[in-house]
Amino acid sequence: MGILSGKHIVLGISGSIAAYKAAVLTRLLVRKGAEVQIVITPAGKEFITPITLSALSSRPVISEFFSGRDGTWNSHVDIGLWADAMVIAPATAATIGKMAHGVADNMLLTTYLSMKAPVFIAPAMDLDMFAHPSTTDNLDLLSQRGNFIIEPQSGELASHLVGKGRMEEPEGIVAALEDFFSSTLDYEGRRVVITAGPTHEPIDPVRFIGNHSTGRMGIALAEEFARRGAEVDLILGPSSLKPSEAIRTTRVTTAEEMLQATEEVIEEADIAIFSAAVADYRPRYHYTEKIKREGQAEMELELVRNPDIAATLGAHKRPEQFFVGFALESNAGVEEAKRKMHAKHFDAIVLNSLQDAGAGFAHETNKVTIFDREGSIEAYELKSKDAVAHDIASFIIKRLGE
Ligand code: C5P
Image 1 (cartoon, protein in one colour):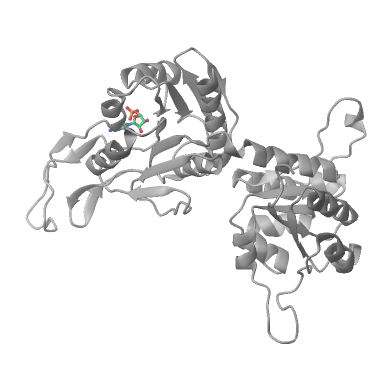
Image 2 (cartoon, helix red, strand yellow):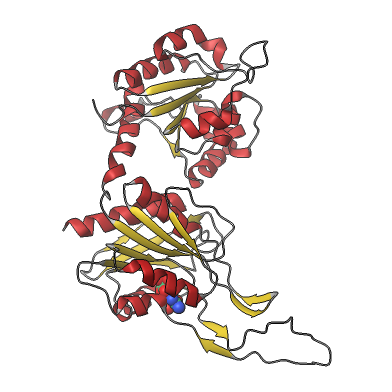
């Protein structure tokens, strides 16, 4: 029956004249076999009646926190877990603004904030509102956080007729969803190992040597590969982030622990991605008691080299395995990245330049260039780390298919 068959879609409708198109969208999705749960804002109900929508979706439309006078209530948390995707169509400037800033003052917005599935936003408003910096900034923010913005393609003849801000047609929204779900299984049957996050090298019970890596890029990669059907082992250094349950996560602290945990799973891996920011050195001695400063004007910390996880495992790489490294360079990026690719036996390397604003550690966004041994180079725009993960996975699958 097609790619959307059996998919759980939450359709959020806000108050725009384009709300009538949500009825057509509902009908198309239901015809494709999707289950559609509609959540509508109070303003949305001014434009289209819940009765029409519940008839089309064969489910009660949710608009209030409480469903009756008997105290039963609609759980936005449950809807967030039930969904395979959320689509907000039409999304008004007000709803987009509230989504960007966490203003959860109606059921659509609380559902959005509890959503575990990918979110697609189809803006609908007049040109002035669409062009206002508040709107463009809010859409940028939402896109950088990994939400998908669906706009009419301004192609060919009609481009001057397609008013900016006009909502994408229901057929276009369905196509975007089909696109998204159809790329999901290209990694089925493959095992992927990913190292991510920083490492902490203890000095004493309360101090360590570490770095500012958050693990965000590696976790985004793990989620992307898992979504596309891979079995993923994530070896994660200290990070406050929580990967989803689809990912087998092993938490480690030090570089030596990370090497050991990665060694245990690398044999079975088809693909390994080394995105961890491993501390190059560790203190020679790990004091079991807190070091006291009394009487010490100066102190020296003796450091020893940590193992290079990527290089150690790269030396035993089987020809059919595909290893990818990361390089974070402040200058001479390309040459240095190529040197590392060869030195560490990577098949490809992802370069993020420290010179690009918004890229690298502790940012939600990243700007990368990917090289491989065959001489292909792909340079990408500044994007959310989720979107970068998508590009990296697509780059690798293309190489594996060649
Ligand atoms: O040498 P450099 O740290 O720039 O190399 C970066 C690449 O090597 C990354 O893929 C990183 O995860 C990996 N690496 C490693 N173990 C180390 C140092 C770097 O796996 N000790």
